[in-house]
Length: 241
Image (cartoon, rainbow, N blue to C red; front, side, top):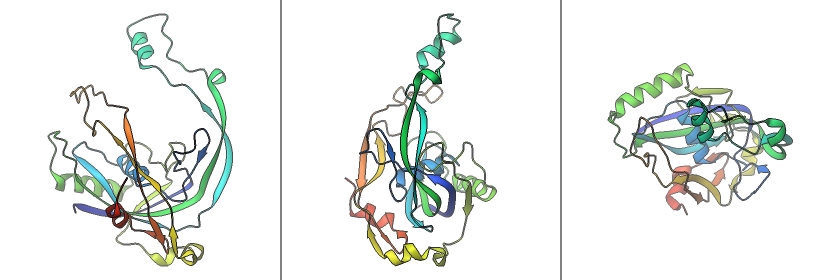
């Protein structure tokens, strides 16, 4: 299976966006495996390994909150940045918020606490760093120390993880009565992750100045939450479509 860990992740807000919603952000009831993989990559990432989510424990009640927030609808153009770096006086890579602002509604989760069991395994990418034991020790040290190279988040970057704790096992007595009383909950078809066509390898073959593909395919699965526990490994085995 590879090297495994168990962590507790907590935060005031989370948004695991449903892809069928075109404009407004509406969160799934529970995290998607892809979002949790992204959270872990904020702690430690190497091309030669990939994270696999095995189990998710939902400790707190599923509680939604509606907010309205300002977003910018444009992004900085790389071509404009490069032109400015070359000294072009006409290049302007800035985004003017007053001109690009768009107000949108969002349905978020609040007061979230999740247990995440995961392991990592070789990705098949040859980057000259294939020592799994070395990766294990680095990740173990970073999780124990609460270190990360960028802020881990719950789905969207503006909803940070406030606390990430390494544990030996999950105390399921901490699952809220509301979640336990729900019993076996069919969560329906959920996004599992986005699979990018480049497989994590630069399409230009240059790791020093990498260029990745933006093309990706959405993968779905149909999990159940049983007394607060989602056995991702089991339902991943049932099939991803």
